[in-house]
Image (cartoon, rainbow, N blue to C red; front, side, top):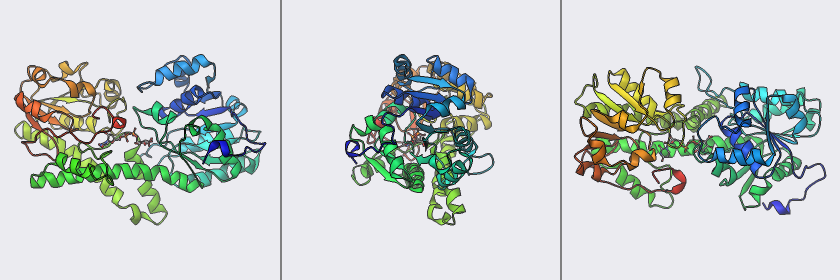
Amino acid sequence: MSAALTAVTPEVVEHPKMTVIGTGYLGATHAICMAVLGFDVLGVDVDQSKIDALAAGDVPFFEPGLPEQLRIALDSGRLHFTTDFDEAAAFGDVHFVCVGTPQAPGSNAADLRYVESAFTELARRITRKALLIGKSTVPIGTAARLTDLVADISPLGAELELAWNPEFLREGFAVEDTLHPDRLVFGVSSPWAQQQLTQAFLPILDEGTPVVVTDLPTAELVKVAANSFLATKISFINAMAEICEATGADVNLLATALSLDSRIGGRFLKPGLGFGGGCLPKDIRAFAHRAEQLGVGQAVAFLHEVDDINIRRRTRTVELIREMVGGDLRGQRIAALGAAFKPNSDDVRDAPALEVARMLYMEGAIVTVYDPEANENAHRTYPDLTYADSMIAAVIDADAVALLTEWREFVDVDPDELGRLVRHRRVVDGRHVLDADAYASAGWEYRALGRPATAKTVSLASDTRDGVFA
Ligand code: UGA
């Protein structure tokens, strides 16, 4: 759809003022980028410390490029922050709800309490026509339920409309994905909502970004279906790695051959320690849970297997390290390089790297963890582990080195120099990013999941949009 061709009805605000509720990862990025794009934006959070940090120009998490954008946005005078919902309700023509939907304790379901509270707080205060736009990842049917809730409590009744606009940004690429997304999805219930959303995204639409206009449930489904597909693709190649381990085949050669089939492609087909983070794992669980509630659990029963394959990669990595050090981890010094769930992030939620470090520790290994950005968060999660403040400090006298998150500094290190620091030249490449030949010629025993012990260097299909191993 061409934004320029969309006729604007009188009630549609052409240059809408925006609020962004929730200034975590998604909300802070969205608020900052929208202000950079020229909109007046009010970021809202119940956490005063987050609001104070952002208002002072500090991004409270690690995201490359975002601090610079925050500075630009603050200097423009278009971005402000508050904890006051009255102010937010009075300010916004459109309100983006970007609060978290974590996995509920003791269940696979998503915890919707923050979403419900954000919509409730807004709905009871807004007294002029405005659009409430959900961006959080929610179970299918939530938007319809919230529509009824909002109509019940709003002084405007059904006049206060809801739309759903799922977010596809990746940590580490948040600015790029927000300013230049592959596509936009507008889940709407009326032509007015579609037009108001169009106005809110005009600068991005004007770049030629495709937009898919849907009903509310389809918009909710797009998000979880996309994350499920990505998780399935990763687990598919990791399942093949298990077959490789049983047969002597090499998963890197397999992945390379598969990726050259243009119908398959190489993105998200990198074998290794598997997926983690605050999205893919909990989203596939919540999706399977919701499908079961809807009576169509069988349709996505495979997602349980996707999850299981993914978790097995962690135990298999520990096994590989154990084999390497002679069958018993007790008293063995292991350097765990990486804690974040992926490079260019300090996020350790459901991080495979940190989980492997913890399992090694539980088996009696002396584990030293080093992550360029995530040490602090990792320490908060597992205070019992030892953390080093450099790669060098982590590897000194190690009996084995485990590369668990593919930060550039780990990929680039010279194997011979590294070898001079360790007690035994043994490395497990949990992310398939090291130069196997270079390590072998420097006298290292090199092992990677799904690859024979004699594996040679195979460069996997790469894409600059997917991270440092591109
Ligand atoms: C993911 C999706 O990619 C985004 O589109 C989505 O918006 C976001 O979740 C969300 O729901 O908010 P993110 O969690 O930042 O983004 O991380 P990804 O880049 O998708 O990586 C997820 C995990 O998969 C990482 O642990 C990564 O190491 C792993 N991975 C990725 C592989 O093991 N192999 C691959 O080939 C690619």
